[in-house]
Length: 367
Image 1 (cartoon, helix red, strand yellow):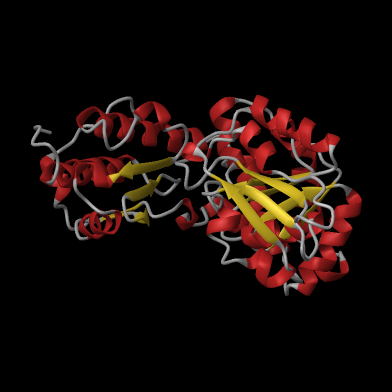
Image 2: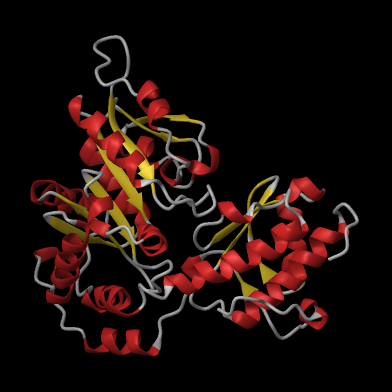
């Protein structure tokens, strides 16, 4: 995107333009991706015979520096299989209070695996290693629940696309390894962290025993995630995937989309980051209490709507009525996510609408 967005008043009321920024899961397959899907050689993946799936798994495992990988239908399943690899019934997994595995996977760890969870409060989802270690109980003995795994999310969804510092992740891995506690990296948007920082994916991968990465968010594939781990753990994961109903047959058609996305659409995540940063700068310049532009690192923009008198749901509803779709993360926040289908025109439209709505209940400053 260009360095500046020109805001035209008519963009706020243009009925023909809709900027759907609810999530980066809304991307649609490109023409090249569709061609790759049509041409993909396939086989029965439950028997381990789909060559396109095998190539995707080898590629992702190599990128993340792990021995093996397993293609999964969803990111939630990838995370839940990983947690079950680390923890059994009656053991616990810990993470920050905004973590996707705790907040947005419908209690699956408890419902399916009998795993308990605890959390700590984390500003913007940033990893505080000392706090995590203080919450962790490596060996609870017969009196306390023992911690089997610590989950780190990078980038952090509800934290606002926060990138976890590599040094903190390395320190956590070092400390947990010493006491036999595992680390799972929920890397649904790890691709964004990699593009934003230049940190090699394998460096992030070395900070965890298991890593999940999503193909159907910013990369633009229609479905799928990949779980990486040791060869032994991946074989166990294959059993758990089937047990949870995730066994798939000629799924190379979908794996081809993910492989094409990694090859052709990874670098363009920087465009999403640039658009989000530009919008944050404009909105934060007018209403610094609503968003700090310096805290917007990737493709997710979270607005503190209550700071200017809006509830999150009310602002989202008002914006939707004018062709800008977002997501209320709670009563005082609204989230807007940039992706490959959100172009400059949509971005300009979103800026105009949001500036106007924030001004309606703001401090009276001119926008």
